[in-house]
Image (cartoon, rainbow, N blue to C red; front, top):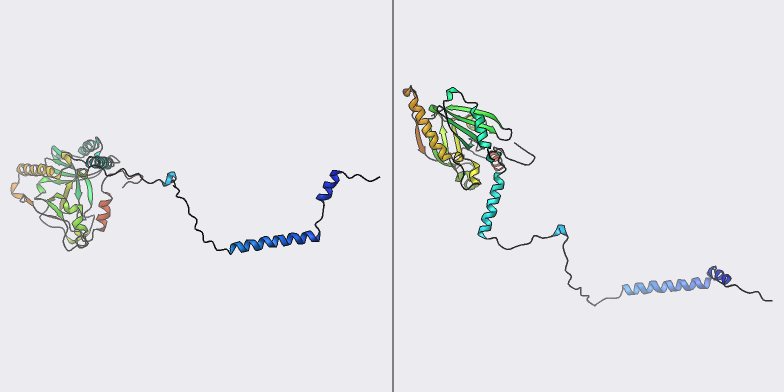
Length: 308
């Protein structure tokens, strides 16, 4: 009786078939034909030009380009300029509401009977002999001219200088200029500097000019004081009277005249005159002034996380 073969046995038999040498040779030949055909295809020269359709590429959110809305009208430009000026004005602590009046009240505490009655207060920019522009409060009394360095951030008086009004023997009004033989003018910076377009007043406290040491020492006290209108004139169309050097000059001339008239020893007083002329700033290089004034280091200003 013949033995029956189970289908399962057939599957096992087929699954366990060992590759014969003839099959291995056939597979090797087939693999060789595939590799040779692949190498032949790589050597084929393709002359057909493949055209790529136009595809619109959209930028990612962080790569979006600004949308141009056309030219701004003159009215829109004025509105934008006004907003920028207001934002710049907010950075100056002295221009904030009530800051100046509170500072003046504190400065009055440093006055005494020898100064006489308080007359007026001003907020101006002092221009020193090295062309450094500094924010100053000026008090005019019956007998004294008080120059105050006030810290609008710390709300305190850092320094106060008092000069008798009868010691002021000359007031000169004019435009600030640089000497022609200085680097400021040779490089062209002086001609384009805002300082040369600015007018001011210079108060002489002595007939004698500064010495050589005083001129070259940036911290020395000079025999004169120079003032210009406060920087808020750049941010406000109608700046207050307290920041205008022209009105300050008129008030000072009147106070000096009255103080000299009230002086008992008239023969001991020097002559007093008011003249017009250029206010020369003897700066020969001006590198420190460029950095100092450009950064407004002489003003109490909001500079983010850094204060001077």
